[in-house]
Image 1 (tube, rainbow, N blue to C red):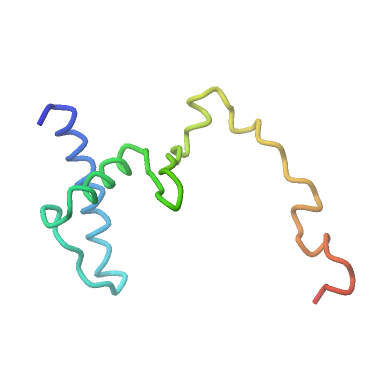
Image 2: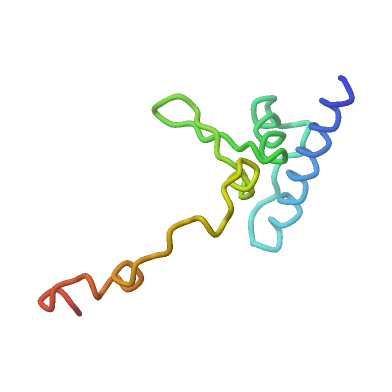
Length: 100
């Protein structure tokens, strides 16, 4: 392993072990140890630790940006359009007949 892949492995393992340590407090059974995981599962934890989570589905895998993704690409957080008043209260958009 190169230094970069060793760092990725350590980061993924640390993230996995953090989650693993929380399971007993949540009333969950223990998770398998890092070495017991398939390589594909360990790689997913490495990507998660690097902020590059991938969701697989019926189509090709899609990368999910980290929470700071927009800032990294020049999109300031305050540039997101504000929610319109009618969007803020879902009941205000309903007709009187459908209100409960």
